Picture 1 (tube, rainbow, N blue to C red):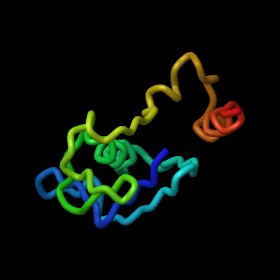
Picture 2 (cartoon, rainbow, N blue to C red):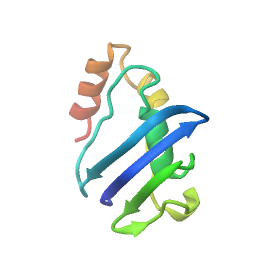
Picture 3 (cartoon, rainbow, N blue to C red):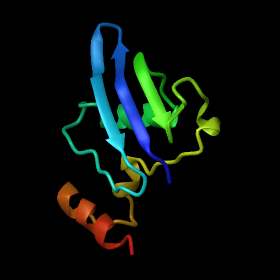
Length: 107
C-alpha cells in the first residue's frame, strides 16, 4: 500500500478543465471511492495517479516520492477502473449497490 498525495493537480484539454486544481491525500490502508456524474474527472484523476495520463499542472506523490513524470511501470501502483464494476462479476445494480457490493466482499 502507499500514501497518495495530489498537490494542485489539474488536467486541461485545450481550454477545458477536465480536472480543476485539486489537493487530495489518501493515507496508506484507506479505502476510497470517487463518485460523481459522467465527465466530472473521476477516471482522469485515476489515470493521472497511475501515470496513464499526464498532468497539466501540480504534483503527485506516492509515499512522499514525486512520481509526477514517472512512467506507469515505475510507480508500483494499480487500480480497478469503473468498467470492472459493471462486469459480470458484480451484480447489475445501481452504482450505490455496486459500491456496497464491493465493500461487503472485500473480506
